[in-house]
Length: 116
Length: 114
Image (cartoon, rainbow over all chains, first blue to last red; front, top):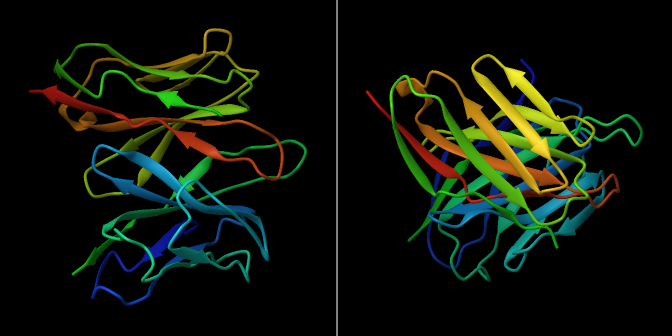
């Protein structure tokens, strides 16, 4: 089945540790996004990537890092520099063809990170 | 900078009623607008996508409209059911460029009363 997969669903880490969240898509989408969702805050953009080996900071990139070595994969690392990492993290992807576009975005099921 | 607003934040409606959810955006130069549904603790499910050249899209009991000149989109749900209870989010995509971003509203939490 085609889709976008986030793993793990739940993640617990001790304060001060780095942790990497996985996001994989087999939709052949160019663009991938990471969002953070907190209660009452809506979705906030962390990082996004429109092409392999290129990515851009979103609105709340501090304390996070990403890589885009393959089109299918866009892992997010939550570093110890992130002051309040406990949140629900959502990954998304969309198609961009540069001409006739269909930028419908598809989301994974999310990873709930709890830092203790 | 694009801002997307959804009012009200929460809405309760008796089962069977038709209802409208609202979404407003500040920059009318959008490329498309998308409506999503989110169940508690889950990811987002795409419901409808409206391209800027379109006025509306329909899928089953759902109808989404787009009025770029007024900066508004609405999601109409006909004959509401308890299974429609969820948070509904709208998102605007602004440009055709490589730095295109999708900007979300905070959502409307809908509760259908049995």
